[in-house]
Image (tube, rainbow, N blue to C red):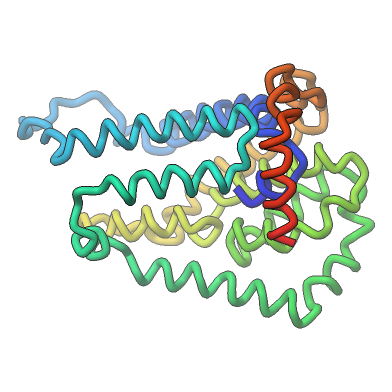
Length: 279
């Protein structure tokens, strides 16, 4: 999301470039997990279970799916991502039937505080000038291409988590040669690197906390058992595809539909005002 807001890459272009890489990464991860935990996935007779519960609010489910579909269409036709997302969120809010107190009771506040703390640390590093000094030392290394940038992003993602790491990279990427490919490399590497350790991504911590609530302890070492091979293989494949810059993964020309919509005065003015407000 951060890269989508910062990089001059349309949603369709970004998807065409990285969806195949992501799907290949899923296949690789599944294969490695199947190999490591072969006995866990072995065919066996499962005990009888109760019938699957029906959704408690079918109307909310249908409404949410419909609005998500509209949001994806808005992304494709060039509507600014924050504008489309906040529009869908507002539609869900004003048409709600659920008591907000019940929703707030299910929020994992400790994880939110932890995630907020990561951004505080990231902001402190940036404000103190430490990140600028470190990036200046590593600038020549990262300018060498996709491989050095991806390795640096992978390392930083497992020190402060991948989302704060991307925030630190944002001012640097536009200064690099072939910035579009570097944005894609950063998106790919920071995502795959998040699989390395429990700290690589907040999503990992959410899974670990959910597992503990169900009586399953996911330790740091047990996670590494699968995280290391999955990250190394998927990162190697992702770097190779990005370096090759195959046409199917890295289209530089926007589709006629995107060009037509972006030529519309309304969306051009909206996007321009949005970017001006952010600056």
